[in-house]
Length: 327
Ligand code: GLU
Image (cartoon, rainbow, N blue to C red; front, side):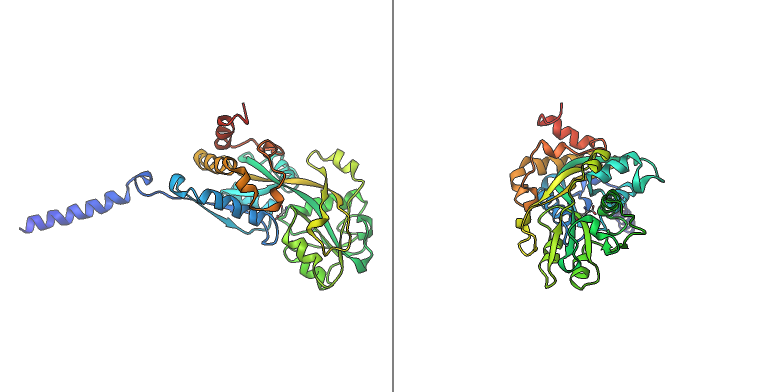
């Protein structure tokens, strides 16, 4: 009797150990992935939400549980994806190019060899917002003013520096440059603590609505005549901000400027099946995805493969080949 008892205790212990070492696939396996986005009033944050929602709906099929993190922006996202802290990040196309080539913030670290692109998303434009009482009507008028050029870690910071440089303004010397996050800039502008701010963002964006809808009268300033800038940097293109999204802004015309694209990136270390599933689900019902934010209006299956500098992840390539988007 005692022997039977001892044997059954041993058997129980063995069973517990066996269950613990069971392969994950035999248990109900869930793969957790996180997408790095941007500030809560930008377009990256709802975009991360849109992608998560799309893939989480198919949790029973893929076992993927996707969450979103608000971050300081493109540069932070590239670095977090490279260090493995995040599986995916939304990143400006110009930043993807620089990270892949080892330029700008990656000059010291060198090319980010494990960076992989998945697809591109909405267009983003370099948006300069200024208070009417400052008299700022063009980029040259920023000289001597207190201007938020963006936090380190953001995409817009380098775009602001490039635009200023092109206008002959050195950001360290010729203006009082602030380095706060885009989500804080509208409040500072309304409180009279800054004269203007730059934000590279899709439209409509909560931050630009907030900046233009307060008591202080505010306009979106054009960054026109930038032909040379566009010729110098292959990743910049002319862009227009539709003023209809910001009825409270004092200018009533669409605003010419330049811009880039938002893109989804990942690491070569992220498994093919995860990238495949996300790509497939976003593309499979693109019309439903496009309804999730007005900034996606112009997205097509073809233009979502444009603006990618890092190699496309093999998981995404598999899907693009299946549907004939890639040969
Ligand atoms: N383009 C910005 C950045 O790279 C973020 C814009 C957004 O959050 O929509 O930091």
